[in-house]
Structure formats: structure tokens, C-alpha cells
Amino acid sequence: MTDQLTRYEMRTATFGYTTVQETAAAGERWRARAAGIYSPPPGMSFAEYRDTVVVGDGADAGAVDETVAGVPVRVVRPERPRDGVVLHVHGGGWCLGSHRTQDGRLAAVAEATGRTVVSVGYRMAPESAWPAALADCVAVASAFDDLLIAGESAGAHLAVLTMLAVGPGRFRGALLTYGAFDLAAPAVARPVGIAFGGVDLRRYSPLFADLAGVPPACFVVGTRDPLLPDTLMMEARWRGFADTRLHVAAAADHAFTLEPIAVTHEAERLSRAFLRDMASNRGR
Image 1: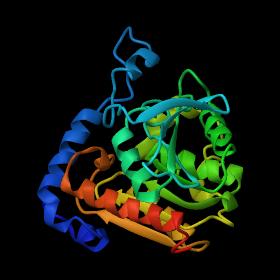
Image 2: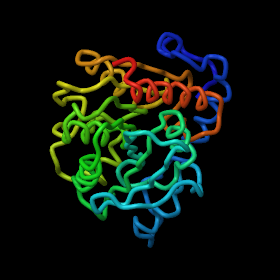
Image 3: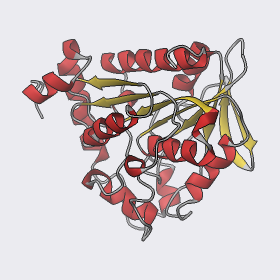
């Protein structure tokens, strides 16, 4: 990859033009780390392997483990909590990741919105067959009213399906970060093969879902993310039903918001601004 933007990237990106070199370098590190990430070493079970793949920041003393509707969750409360919940769904290709590794990011969301953030510890593949992950997210979401929902990658996919299953009218807004919205896309072939088996992929692809009644949504993605087309197509469809915001980071690859770089800070600022507006009922 290069730290020079292509013409397409220059047309598509909405922010991050001044930090392209740093962003591109972070993308190179991510690609090296992600190569083979869905393949456990010989002799190691997937559950054992999952514990060695830590993605995100560490646990924070201000967050607590609780259970909602029989599902483990990570709860982060703001200093002065108000009504309402931000439901968070972590990424990791439906088989990696954890609800316990983004405490810092979620604490910032809690303070920005004044809402308690609840991150879902949904069951993952291959131990739990689809739709166990979705069932857990739906169970937790159904326990609350006045919801915002946010997710990254596979978490964004689950966030949309959860919202549609529970009823989109119960949600004020959705923050969808580099989501996997078409399960037939080549970029997600490996984790989809692990997580979905022989299910009808189109049925569980948000890109083809009935979006009637959805709330406003904010989409965040990078110009070098293999799932960029998913986001652009999903945002275009969503815009036919509700207001949208689209933020595209110049030279950013998949999972860029997990890197401590300048473009991440800007993306997080834009994301929190959306959630804050939706929490206060502005922009709807």
C-alpha cells in the first residue's frame, strides 16, 4: 500500500487528509496482524485461541460485568447518568473479540451522551451456531427502552439485525462503523464460513433488509477498508428511509479505530457527536 491517496480516495474521503502517512502505516500494521487471524494454531481450540487475540484497550476499573436477560454484558456508567442506554455490539468476525476490551472508548461515549453503555457478550462461533449471537443481542436490547445502538464490523451487522428484530421504532439512532452488511462479500468469506455454515446469507445481510422505520444512522469507514463498498451501499439505501451521516477516513483500513492515531481520534469525535445529538433528540 502507499501513503499517496488515489483519485478515488480523494473523492470519497471526508476527513483525515492531513494524516495520511500515519494512517497508511497503521493500515499496514493491521494487515500484517490480521493475516490468518481466523485460523487457530494446530492443537488449539478456537475458544483457547480467542483468549490470545486481544483487540481493543484493556479493562477499566470504572466498568462492571453484569447479566441482562441471561446474557453477560459490560456496563459503563457516566458520572451523572440520565435515562436511556447505548447498546454496544463488538466486532471480531462473529468469532473473535470481547465485550470487555473497549472500556475506554465506551466510557467516552457514556460521558458524551450521559447514557449508560451496555456492551453485549454474545455467544460466538464456532462453539455457538448462528443465530445464537443475534438471539443474545435481541434479548439484551429487549430489556431496555430509549435505545441508541452502536457496533463495529460484525458488530455493526448484528446491530442492524438486532434493531430490525426488536423494532426500529425503539431506537433513536445507530452508529455503524465499517460494517459487514453483505455476507456474500469476498472480504468476509473466512469468518462467514466459520459463523454461518449453510444458512441463507442474503436473509441475514442487512443490505437487503426492509429498512422501513429505521432511525437516523451514522456510518464510519476508511477508504482502504475492503468493506468500504458495503458501507457506501448501505448508507445509500438507508438514506431512502432516514437521515444519515457518512464519515470516510482517508487511507484508513479496516478496524482503524482500534489504533491510537490521529484519524481515530477524529472518527471518535464525529461518532460521539452523532450519538450525543441523537441522545438529545437533535437531528431526528
